[in-house]
Amino acid sequence: MLFDSPSSFGRAFRIVTFGESHGSAVGVVMDGVKPGLPFDLQAIQHELDRRRPGQSELVTPRSEADRVRVLSGVYEGRTTGHPIVLAVFNENQRSGDYSAFQEMFRPGHADYTFQRKYGLRDPRGGGRSSGRETLARVAAGAWAKQQLSALGVRIRGFNREIAGIAAQNVDWDFVEANPLRSAEREAYEAQRAAVEQAMATHDSVGGVAEVWIEGLPVGLGDPVFAKLDALLAYACMSIGAVKGVEIGAGFEAARKKGSENNDPLSPEGPLKNDAGGILGGISSGAPVIVRLAVKPTASIAQSQQTIDKTGKPSEIIVKGRHDPCISPRIVPVAEAMCALVVYDLWLTQQGLVDGSVPSAEEWDWSAVERLLDR
Ligand SMILES: Cc1cc2nc3c(=O)[nH]c(=O)nc-3n(C[C@H](O)[C@H](O)[C@H](O)COP(=O)(O)O)c2cc1C
Image (cartoon, rainbow, N blue to C red):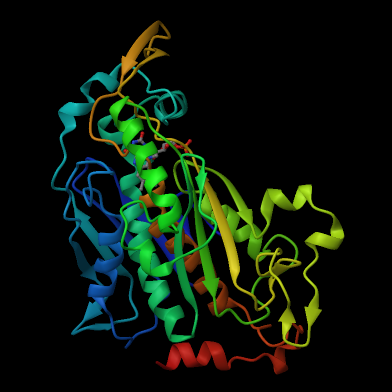
């Protein structure tokens, strides 16, 4: 199982996230880290900076510094082998913005189901359902990314689509240089105009984020329940506002013929990559391509029909500081979730060579040992 409790994720490298949007802190406990590894806090802060709000006029105006602090597990710049606890203390919370939601449910958000399930909820910022929880995933994912990078695995993402306007190509230099993390200049201006239009009309738009995992060996993932694609889909669907996950050609594969969709094989590996780097749940050596459908932000400052806590019909206008499109901020979260899946698999899997399934004696531990010996 990928989780033992609803707030934990992973097996060999296990994380537990904690905290609410308007509580005192949000953070993560990371367990399963070998002692003596250099701990690069700046690299973690860098990833958090990519996720944090207030970075441009096209995202929420909430400006949170999101300074990460290490509470345990690191001594003199190295891991101790004990749980590493990372926390960001909340600073820029305006709980008053949420007083109206104490009694009423926001359409599209988690208020209704939280109230019905738990009989109570923290309405300030959505509590545990807040996008703020994802900073904890990004912090842990940054650690996983660092470890994977040392093994030659690179994980990066962009937005393929914003407001239904799709990019055809990826210009990696452009991705982190524009506030939408849009894939290319050609699509960006129209996407930006659509986001601005949504802001002007108190509405919101969705997007399609895409993550590339490059440098994987053949052999990560298992049939049947632990297929790499199944694990990635699970991980990415756990992000708030994600309503669909595709691998490779994804839903487009359903519209192709077999002769078009199959990736011909050569001695060097697949000649194209409609399979998205995964065959039979196992990495094929080609880049793994994951796409996430991100819904338009639920919180919009328009009058919407809803009910109050007693079930009485009502109207709500969701004020407050919200992203008109969540997709730009989802990209680093999606990268983090993919990194957590791959890193955990790397620590637990042995059939990494040529896709063959070796006997226990033949297992190639060198990749794992290389990692642990660093
Ligand atoms: C980084 C991030 C930021 C988010 N910001 C907002 C926001 O400002 N307003 C909002 O209504 N939802 C926001 N969400 C989405 C909600 O968390 C999500 O829609 C809600 O929990 C309901 O879950 P569901 O959409 O998966 O059903 C954000 C999600 C993420 C990952």
